[in-house]
Length: 472
Ligand code: 5AD
Ligand code: SF4
Image (cartoon, rainbow, N blue to C red):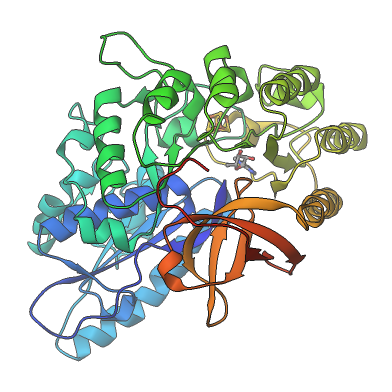
């Protein structure tokens, strides 16, 4: 799931106290949000304090996304704005270091310095634990570029977040367990930017989740570009599957909710489907991208399964967990996509009925096989198809939300609400829910009766005793 940009922390800007301030902006997927937090932890340990405003920062890091052209181009417009902010700080006798991190850094490396000379430092996703050293070099008038895939495991050298930082990030946390991808879908840059599939050993993940749980985190979302291909070393020395890992994490109290994203249909093995049957903490919501409903397009995309395979898989997961809700990513206008191919995608959507969906016009990415294919689809055709597809998926989402009215669902409250006196949280199906209740309930799970559907979220009333411990 790739969303719009996010900031890592919301802390008040710091005055000129002599302490260095850092502002980190994340683009793209949740893994970048997690990486931004780990960069913040690294820099906090090196004496930095986070600020929520770029123009107040001694160091600005853009943690970038390369998945589609639009996402990658955003970085350069932001760098233009930062140049103005840096020049202003210089005129006032200060300065600002500017770093580009993430997938654009990995993909473009030193090219970024040529296109945007304002940048002081380029760091790829595998080496952000080296940030303090790289910053020291950048301070000596060098412009370091580090896009290595090093032998050392960054997870074992990164400092753990301080308890206060964990609490400030709320009761729902991301934990990266897997990185990279070996699937080579023909539209996708990930296998090139994030490299081959690697999985973290079970022990490090368990220790991280235990620490988060002790600090008050109640929901863990396991992250990976291909998370269900997880095969990390278990305590018994054998490779564990994601299903085995989830069984282990479900024993950590008082974590009440587990999720994982993003999955490939080919890697939904029996142990994972059984985990959905056996673990109440594993939420009945699965993001399972299919991209297209046309077998011909799925084949050219190198997805290695048919639409019927996908539908059978959905059926097996629903048999294991009948209330399971699904979301997916879709690409319209992949090279060669005809009206019939597109109609097959709409049929598949009708058949599954998604509770949410992310859909994109195909964007040819340099270096991927799709970019060189004949029969590129015209932008206007892509736009028309996208609008039709989104009308269908938005209708399904609305129908699901409408059907929630009158139901009582467990909501994990994770933040203040839109209006004073309200708090907000998520249902098991990731629906946003607003309730009139005391802020003290943030971090707790409570039964909520859904009473109405607003434009952005559901509304409800407390319908039972909140708990910070029990599985919900
Ligand atoms: N063009 C459009 N969408 C893309 N995605 C990945 N690469 C491209 C591309 N080149 C979408 C896929 C993927 C999601 C993260 O982004 O749907 O699942
Ligand atoms: Fe990209 Fe396909 Fe790998 Fe997903 S499975 S990250 S879409 S190559």
